[in-house]
Amino acid sequence: MAFFSVAIGQEHLRFTAAHFIAFRGFREPLHGHTYQARVTVSGPVGPDGYVVDFLALKKIAEEEVARLHFRTLLPQQSDCLVIEESAAQVAVHCEDGAYFVFPRGDVYFLPVVHSSSEEIAQYLLARIRERLRDVRGSSIQTIEVMIEDIPGQEAVCREDFFVR
Image (cartoon, rainbow, N blue to C red; front, side, top):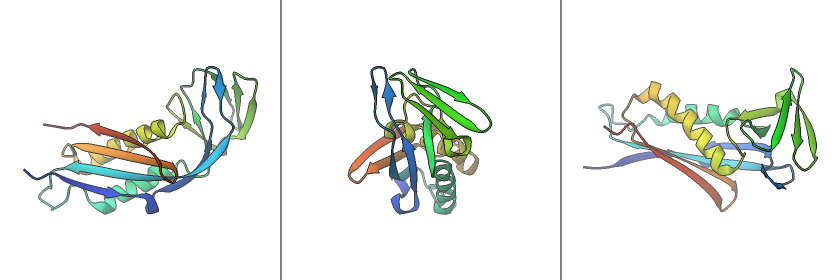
């Protein structure tokens, strides 16, 4: 039995965002990356000749990446940051005494513990998976999301699912 996958990638899936990693006893400085993503989807070829239509996959991935573009990425589930949110701003208190205040519109909350490339890849994979269900039903067998934060430095998250 043949195995098929399709991929869309880096030149179409770029986003620039600020972040910092913080965990107990450590906080890196606030900094930014121009991230690049690649999404690979595997499964059987359907009656229409596709694993998934490239245009549909590209639209979904571009929309999800666009949510992160020109934002400061903050981890909602951090165990060492105290985040206070109002309609106008977001304040972040760090364990080491650092304090940041961002305009509310400049922040994107990720449902993760850290804003690492690994957790960004996992977040995007979950969002893309949910949206692909509407497009392709249960035929998709794997999704892989790669995030490159600097050239040559990649994090990959892969999930196998919907296997009958």
